[in-house]
Image 1 (tube, one colour):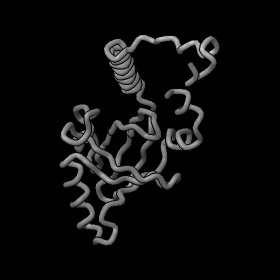
Image 2 (cartoon, rainbow, N blue to C red):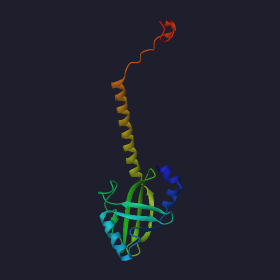
Image 3 (tube, rainbow, N blue to C red):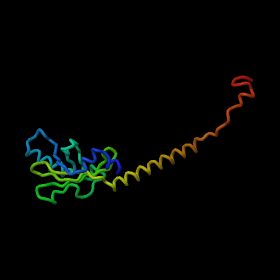
Image 4 (spheres, helix red, strand yellow):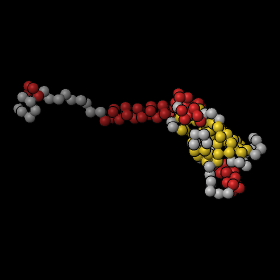
Length: 164
């Protein structure tokens, strides 16, 4: 996963801090959008666009929605007038972490994607366990349903198949 994150052009662009915007409820008035953004964040999710690449992300940052969530993944207290966000997820087969902030008045800010080494190791360990379990089940099936290989009849001595 690390090599894909480091070599893939999209990940290279997204790993540089760049402008982000809240994309929810675009057809609504700005005041309503602000209120909905704060409410959505408090519920544990937000729709964010990384402007330079045009990448839209549905972020989740509480344990009800995101099994990778940690405490303080949505922090309104850290800096007045801003919310700081962190969200871990898998993108194109790579474990990443969104890290950034959004201004609560303008609904824009800055963020980047980071490679999530810890999550990548956890995912790899889980995959290895699944592969090992699968291989054990296959070996057990072969053992249970194994029918001994009997050599085919010697057709040459009898004159070929179907002949006496």
